[in-house]
Every structure is written in C-alpha cells, then in structure tokens.
Image (cartoon, rainbow, N blue to C red; front, side):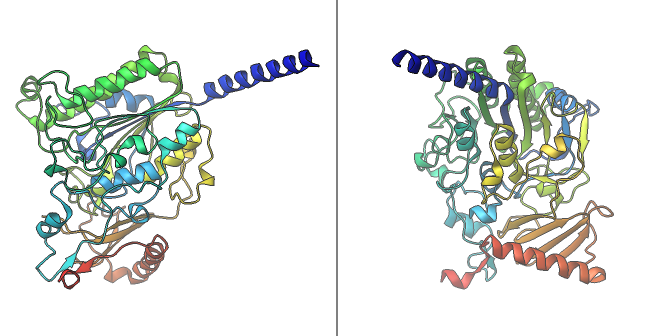
Length: 464
C-alpha cells in the first residue's frame, strides 16, 4: 500500500510539473516600456523623418501593430501611471493629477486657484492606494517574476524637498507586486539625468553615466538573467521629461538639439531591450508594449494643445504592440484604446481572467490583436479637475464616443463639442448646432462621474 501510494504521489507530481511547463510555454513574457511626455509627433515608425532617430520603434512597429488612436487616461503623468497599474480611470482611483514635487499646497498657489476667486483643484491622492488593483500582483499570482525600472511618481508629494526622492517607501513599486525596483520613488522628473543620480532607489555606478542608458542596460540585463523563467519587465523611462539633458556627443549628433538627442537615447533603450530578447531567444514569446504617459511637452503638429490639456494634443499618445504569432506584423488599428486597457490585456494574456476583477474599467485588447476592428466599448471617459498654466482646455471632464468629443468645463473655459472626424484639430466648437448630441453625451458623462464618485473642483472659499 505504501509503495502504491508512493507511485501515485510521484506520478501526480510528474504530471503536475508537466502541466506547469506546458502552461508556461503558452504564457508570453510581458514587457511594458513607457516614455514620459512623448507626443505622437515625436516618433517615426517608417524612417521618413530625417530629424527623428527612432529605428528601434520602427523595428517594433514593423513586427506588430500601431495604434493610431491610443489615449492616456489623463493629460499628466501620475494619474495615467495609476490607470496603467490598476485598469481603472484616475477618477475611480482617486488620483487625478501629478503628485507635485514642490508640494501640493505650493502647487495649488502656483496653479492659479488659491487667492484668485476661481476654481481650485479637486481633492486628489498623492500616492497609489495600497488596496488598488495591480497588474504586477496579478502576474505574480500567475507565475511571473516581476521587475520595475524607472519613473514611478506614485509615491507622495514634495519629492523636491528630499535629497533622494523618497517620501514613503511603502508607496514604492515593490509594495504593489514588483519583485525588483530600480528608480521608482516619488520623483516626477530626475534630480539628475547623470550619475550621481540622487535617487534613493538607484545605486550610483559610474560618474557621468546617463540615466536613460542605465535603465535600458538594467532592464536588458534583467531579461538575460531571468530568460529561463516567465518574466515581466516594466520600464518606465524618465525621458523625455524636462529638464532637457543628454550626453554632449549625442546632442552634437542631433545638430545641437538636446530634445532630439533625448528621443534618440530613449529609442536606444528600447533597442537594448529588444536585443536582449533576441539574444535570449524569448522575443517570439513576448508581448511587448510601447506607450507614453500623456501628450508631449513639445506640441504635436496637427493636434491641438499639448501635455496638460484635455484636447487631443494632451491625451493622444504613441502606442505600438508586438506579439509574434498573435499580432500580424505591420498592422494598424484606428480603434480608440486607453491606458486602462493594459491590466486586462496583460492578465488575460498571462492566462488569468480579468473579467473576475469587477472593479477594473479597461478592455482586453486581444480582439484587436486577432484582427477584429472594434472592442465593443461605447465611450472613453476622462476627468481632470485641475488647473494648468498656459492652456485653455483644462479643469474639465471629457467623453469621446465615435467621432464626437464633449468637453465639460468647470473653470473659465466653456463646455465644447467637437467632431474629431471632420475637425481633428478641434478648432470649431459646434455645440450650438448640435445641442441634442451634446445633451446626450453630457448625460452619459454625468452618469459616469457619479458612478466612479469623481471628485470635483472647489472654490477659494473652501480654503479660508
């Protein structure tokens, strides 16, 4: 009887191990690279812009799918990053603007609300709630090693008052499901792009080394070390966020333009990761996403406004996804997608079931990978109840449904209706001619704001 039990036990163990190996073979490795403040006009997928040197994004695009209508869930960084991690809109997470390095009170005074009798930013969290969903946690449950490199900016306000960017380590990536964290703290921009970095989560290595190159190296080395196991890498580059800094040699190679040098360095970091996947033989079994956290600090030609605005220049972002064998090479899609879609896409691709996570709002992008034209989503929603210098379409909420876009203003800018198909640059507010459409969209937008318990702008009187 003991021998029989031993045989059955060993047989079940071998079968279980076999099933795990078989399951692992079907699960892709997942790599997610996100640039910072990179507008859609500052990448080149086809090698046609002599000024832009992004050959590695071109490699990625040729192997996968270009998303022509990818949106960030917010026009600034922290809320979009929260939406990526959680699969929820910033309004639902409760984090709707960037965690200011100068501190929230100082930022409110500077942003044009306090003391001027106008609308003041809505209440917002300055860190990612610990109980929020996290794709990293879900991937760990499914057998992945998880690593984070780069900019987190979900760990508290006032980072510029610190010497190392650390406000509270409890809000760092390793407490949201990542096994490794290098670079992720409260910083929204690097204290220094060159070693010594003055970042408490990065060990200085070589004086004068460039941060973008370092992060690319570290992500690539991690893949080489972990390629025999199922791995996930999140690489959120600090580039191309201000201050504009790049190695002198690279600036010279770009005609003295530091920003273009930063774009090229960002692309090189992407290339280092692709090379590591090729070297380790894991590229063919890797779901690879390239994205940006919001519109560009530098405007994109053909789109209205830029980072911080709820017009297209503030929320439209570059996005490419490659997954050999799953996504047909050299394809494009015009279906609107959002940063909230990444969690369900990652979880389902990894063998999980995101539909059981009732609190998430995103859609799995798999139907688009498979050649379908639509995701079956009625509308995209945005909520940015905050002031911003130098821009008009701030302090509002937005619904995009098909070709229609309604901007609901809470500050000085009036509510506006645009037809994105006929007027992609959002020059004409046609709300007076289309009141029935505007009313219908406004009703849907209000219902969503209520559903997610969106925080609304306040008045100066609230701070007396």
